[in-house]
Amino acid sequence: MDNGIWAVWYDLPENVQKEHIDWLHSSYLTEIISRPGFTWAAHYQSNGGGPDMDKVRNTFPKSVDMENIGKGTEFLILIGAATPSTFFAPNVVDQENSSERATREMLNMREGERVCIFSEFARVNGPEIETRPNGTTPGPAIQMGSFRINEIDKEFDLGSWYMQDRLPTMAKMSGCIGARVMLSAAGWAKYSVLYEFTSLEARLENFEKQQEALNLDEKEWSGKVIRSTMHTPGSPIVAQRIWPPLKNG
Image 1: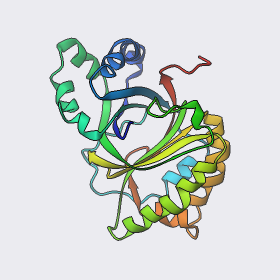
Image 2 (image 1 turned 30 degrees about the vertical axis):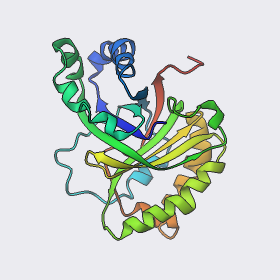
Image 3 (image 1 turned 180 degrees about the horizontal axis):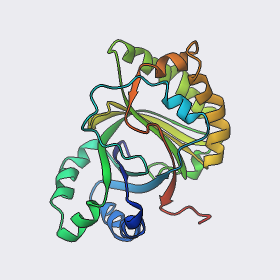
């Protein structure tokens, strides 16, 4: 199982991208998944999403508590573990901060870094689940949001919406591998949702054009719910996996 996820969002200056990514894929991530209790690692690069995504992001209320929150949006590393407690014994952030000089120099190339550790709250499998066996690397394309709620009472409605509306919809959606809702064990965001798709094209046609469009209508349940969510910069991120490489290269 992989009920814990360590997520790292960040940017990279263009002049060091190739060097950093080559090192990450050939050395660092392979070392990460060799650690006890770690089940998989994946590296994603953002593509921003389709034409409706900026409209959706503009519906979110602004948070007043994000001055010191990293604003990286270009890349996302996801690392799975059996439980979120795996990431605290030892503490993965402390490990990175105390790593050897060569590793630290590579990690210091990141800009706008933001870190969260999440625990799974609910999950559904989609029609394409056979493309990702249980407990393995997430799909080729993802959408991942990270946020808080602007009023505590609205958290009950948020949970109801996920369980009664969004997750049942994902379970039937063509091109969907699966979806999971998570709660934060550490980091600014209290919630995160990870949607997995067979491709960016499948996500655009079956999810963004059909479901995210509902968010733009404040009379819809979806539209009401998202207007209470205060997202981290660039959230939700829409991205394609660059490691492990896709089968089509």
